Image (tube, rainbow, N blue to C red; front, side):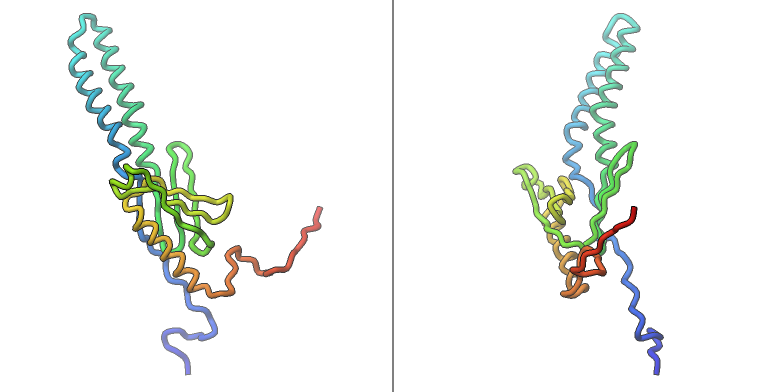
Length: 187
């Protein structure tokens, strides 16, 4: 007799679909100083734009104000918008970059350690840097994320769930050889 839900009992069940748990950016507090500079520059440019005698000086005031806004408000805003952290049921994804996009992924199936680093200001706003380490060379920093303790606990829970599903004999490096050593002798 066959099972109507799964016709071949010997075939493995399909893996559950990957679900996005959270999409994060740095805390919005990072835009405080650039926004303050934007307001100050707008006020100073508005005040001095018609107050100087020569037309080229008025143009210089406007160009200077635009340059300050571009460098000290728009670029930090663009940098903040282009760095994203995505946590799914299978992996952590970090995407950043303006002209060159960089994408880093860390699957939950790899053994990793999750720690939290906070300054006094981050503790005041409940944010912090969540560090995910999966070895001496592999570290992923989720910088200044909001609700950092919740993110840390969620990552630890997801890693524990994946380890429980894999069983005690699972090798995180995916090696089929186990403890055997293989040599490549090709030229």
